[in-house]
Amino acid sequence: MSVHAFDAAIALAPQGEGALQGRTSPAYANMIGPFGGITAAQALNAVLQHPQRLGEPVAFTVNFAAALGDGPFLALARPARTNRSTQHWVVELRQGEQAVATATAVTALRRETWSATETPMPQTPLPQEVPLPGRAGRVEWLNRYEMRFVEGSIPPVWDGADEQDSRTQLWVRDHPPRPLDFASLAAIADVFFPRIWRRRAKLTPLGTVSMTVYFHCSQAQLHATGTGYLLGQAQAQAFRDGYFDQTAQLWNEAGELLATSHQVVYYKE
Amino acid sequence: MSVHAFDAAIALAPQGEGALQGRTSPAYANMIGPFGGITAAQALNAVLQHPQRLGEPVAFTVNFAAALGDGPFLALARPARTNRSTQHWVVELRQGEQAVATATAVTALRRETWSATETPMPQTPLPQEVPLPGRAGRVEWLNRYEMRFVEGSIPPVWDGADEQDSRTQLWVRDHPPRPLDFASLAAIADVFFPRIWRRRAKLTPLGTVSMTVYFHCSQAQLHATGTGYLLGQAQAQAFRDGYFDQTAQLWNEAGELLATSHQVVYYKE
Image (cartoon, rainbow over all chains, first blue to last red; front, side, top):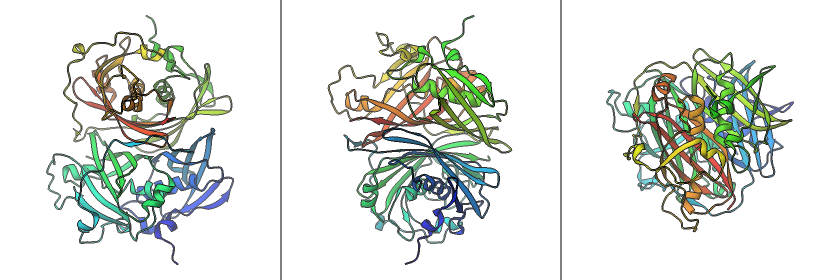
């Protein structure tokens, strides 16, 4: 059995002193450096595979300090505080003497309580009813995901039209399909192309500087979701002087809101 | 001239080795430990007053690892990476040998670009037209803010009714008024009472575990906002097995979206 490209990409090898070694993956290459979602998954994986980890991820923030150069990096994860049912993590990814990403995570032992989804899944056609894009992605990581755009796909022409809004809805899963877990869900939270491209139909240079993911799910729910599609929705709230935000929701086909996410993105003009 | 309670509360004294000493403030006391917003402001202030700081805050995440005990704490802020126009910060607040909060921040030199607000300020009555609550706050920090609830105030009776939604809109500013800055804006991002109380009209025990604030403003805009009111809006997206999220927006009276914020909150049942 061959290893899925995602598992190969997030693999970390112990180096002693709590350090792990990872390596950038050509399969997830972006225009400059890797797809941010894979860097996020690598940072989260340093927590997930830590022998002292308590519980499952609840909150995760990753800050992209620099584009990673092709090759190895060190991942350093330490539990800054361990409570009875929660644990606080600080993570740093390094190349040479320089930080290329910083991250924090909160993991927790969860137990069943009253629960409710307040942001319901939008009504959309079924995944099978939404066509696949007709051509391969312009950058390699796009070929690692099956994306079926329901609304707000990449603008067909870059004519600089100021659209009414920046919203996108799409069905998405790993390509080839892979059972969902916390690491792949964190990566999928970053699959939305930048909202400013959608809003302005203009290819301004940009890069995510920080992303936060809140997990509203257990490993059991992820297991039940399996290789099914996720419905993703993303929209910006403000574009101001070189930085904009985007908020995102990810539901499984059963309509469960598995994760909410937010990011702030640099843009040149 | 007397010092404003907020300035006294976030004051940090250099201790050498890059450490700063702060102290919890009785003026911002919550039920157990301090108001999370003041802890957030203290952590951000460790970055703001750092001699190596580059630019203004763009993104800030604080993780509440434990309720602070009354008394002093150490704030440790270090620039993990400094680029040409952005800087990545890692912050830890400690009491004794234990972390009580961790944080990361991204600061940046911003320059004027095409800008737009995609989430417009809701239509509401003017601040002066919205009555003040008739009684003092149940916990001390509530008395440090002037809050005029437009919609979704604290439930008048705790009858466990499951409301349709968890949304709150309010006009808010420091009490007494104080010119807005990045630290006070970060604190105000946490003034919204927990969405689960609003949604369920039930006082379940809880506590914020992580909050992120994105700043969509410059110091000049904050200066222009001055002591004016902010319109705040907050709503949950999901409540699941002990943790819920809430998203928030803060506009000034001119309708500029100054900050967007997200947090995840533990709840007992």
